[in-house]
Length: 106
Image (cartoon, rainbow, N blue to C red):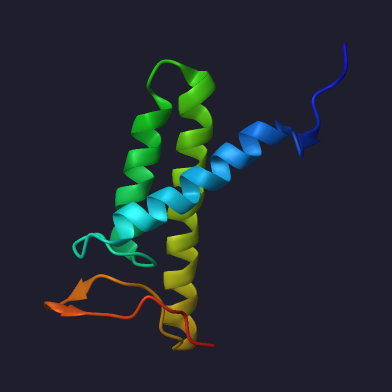
């Protein structure tokens, strides 16, 4: 029996599924103005979604999905912290009803 290729401790298929979940959560939740992307609120919402998903049965499917959403939550938090500490603009969503940009300007 041949070994399945690994990326770190994950199978290649899990790594691809995690990446797809991260991209998907960013695209879907980022389009909701109240959630946004790259904001404290989006980090919180995605973090809660990831933790909730990790409690579901069928770990074979929910674990990589929850991991991808959790990575997106962590990315949003880090982007926001960098943005706040350096003055670079990051994130989307609304602030006092005014939509903000999706890009990070360096």
